[in-house]
Length: 99
Image 1 (cartoon, rainbow, N blue to C red):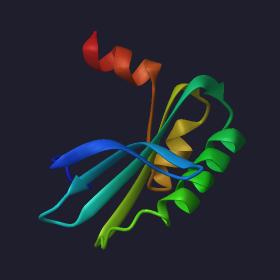
Image 2 (cartoon, rainbow, N blue to C red):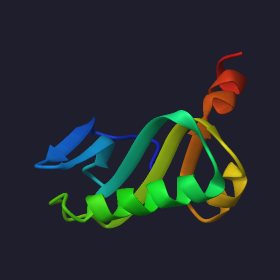
Image 3 (cartoon, one colour):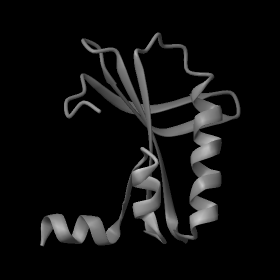
Image 4 (tube, one colour):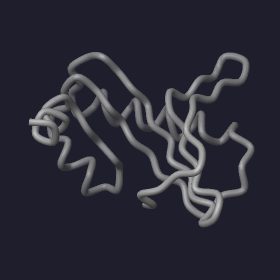
């Protein structure tokens, strides 16, 4: 996943909305992120990521690589999701980064 993105914003079309979409136009990578202000179990987090993947199919962008992520108040067993290739962060991750 690229560390630099040329464009970052939200996306919506009809009844579908994605909280954050980031594009790297040079490498043609796209990152989709869903944000939830709640405590999430592993099952709830997986369901949310599955919904995000479904919604991303409606974004018209010819990408070389798609990545998916979830940011929430807390996420149980987030390491399992990271090992599966997802970008997953919660408040404890932000606390450790900003002190």
